[in-house]
Image: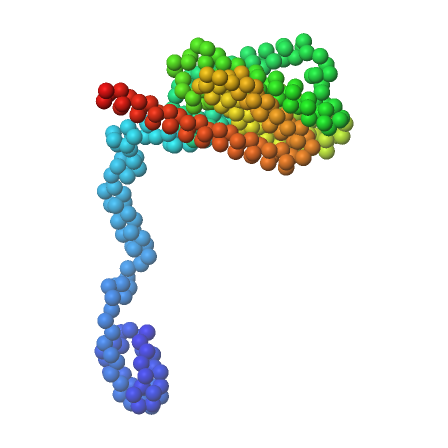
Length: 368
């Protein structure tokens, strides 16, 4: 429609589009009017073009564009150059394996094997974090992985075998109702025994693989030994949690089943994520003291004893607090990691100074 105002009576008048450019009369006052010429767009000048025709044209245009797109180039972003870069991209492979491996583990039919694989997966996950980002060790990884399986399989078996010959008051001291005796039990029975066990691969590496190792590699071996111990220990605690859920079901019915399953889920998640980390930190602390003892000509045994006692106290106190006040136990775990990280910084500074001193000595010898 064309809307205009009558120049005489000012009335608003409407005319159809075909009145454009013609003369008409005002319906109110009868005066003659000249309807202005309205320029039509292409769409307006072709009213016979319907929605179907427009849709057909748009579809044809899209199909033509699709035919012109180089799909191989646009959809696949890889060429010879960036494939070569991708094969060496640590972040890419880490994220890929972190996301894919659990999906592959659940394809295994046997649940007990699934649990074992998940325990090892979280141990390796923390191992990569410690080696690559915390310790920043570029040394051999074969010994570290060997330490993990040695402690997790042979080491735990050896520890359980030794426990059979220890007196009952020592073995069960951590379970005492007296809090002070319980703390001492956790330190001298749990802490001392487990940390000594986890240090075995470090001493083995020093004995037979000394030439292949640097200071950081020794600490990495200690950390992986702790990861292996935690991974295989988690399997035992998982079975215990399942047994507890079963007993709760017998005692309390459906409510006991729900509570037992929830507790088992929390325990397994906790041990898989954080307690693996804690074991690695405790064994890494002792490995640090073994490393610096190996570098010094004196106080070697004393330094190892100090390291063992430090790791055992932190380990035992954590286990003791976990049953009394988990919040304090969490803060103690954080403090333990701060200590471990500080030891690493101290060791790296010492190694850097040693390298600089050796460089100065070599320069002086060459000038002579």
